Length: 293
Ligand SMILES: NC(=O)c1ccc[n+]([C@@H]2O[C@H](COP(=O)([O-])OP(=O)(O)OC[C@H]3O[C@@H](n4cnc5c(N)ncnc54)[C@H](OP(=O)(O)O)[C@@H]3O)[C@@H](O)[C@H]2O)c1
Image 1 (cartoon, rainbow, N blue to C red):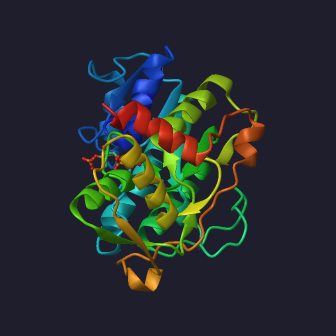
Image 2 (image 1 turned 180 degrees about the vertical axis):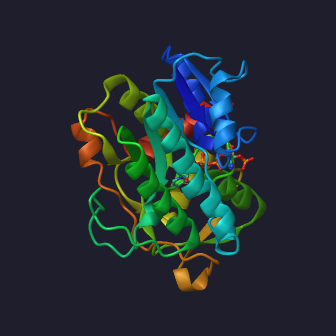
């Protein structure tokens, strides 16, 4: 069976649905089984509400400390979850012989690239969140030989606060908003990432290690907002057009520095036979499936 850790988060909830629809047996844990506590993880394996003694073949770690700005003030708390917690999971996976899929982020890179980042590019995180995620990656790769580390970026979905919801709310409330136009990346629908994770479990790529997965293509937050507005109007979720002013990063300061360029190359995961849908098509599908009622 599959142990889905962080099963109540944005990605975890989506993955739970995909695993069920794919007929893959899984059981989940979230906050109540604190990944910072190795004993709690160990106990879950035998617990009736956990694996109940069944063999765990795969662990997928979707749990994380994801508050990027708050992490600047709470780096030790973020490290406990993103690094040491991930390490606890990796150690246990190795002990029980389970393969581990661990989710990581574009924030491990410096973010000043000029071509899509490949898996072997050196990490150089610029903030506390990225540092703790990079440490988590190293612990996972050092402690659990059978690991797949899947880096993703700009995640949105039905089951968590995200950029699409925020934009739709602001566009309803205002006639004009400003959105950063000098940061480049790729939006990623959590459903597509969940399907990619399920595909890794089913296909089991020949080599372990790091894989990048986002949707295909690249854009800016400003262009992403424009597409959200276009679809919001088309699906009747917005009743008026709102002017979207392009901002520079300097005009929209945040506590944690955001990468100027964080496009990830998907060549490796595509070569493993895993589909990478285009970002606009997936955004459209998200509206169609989850937002238009
Ligand atoms: N969201 C993005 O834009 C984005 C971008 C790139 C990469 N990622 C990565 O993608 C993965 C999934 O992100 P997400 O957006 O789905 O995150 P999320 O919605 O914040 O979900 C994380 C889950 O982990 C739980 N959790 C936190 N601390 C825990 C602990 N100590 N023990 C057990 N569970 C704990 C959280 O519970 P609480 O809600 O109670 O805290 C939550 O249910 C993460 O690895 C993240 O770093 C996300």
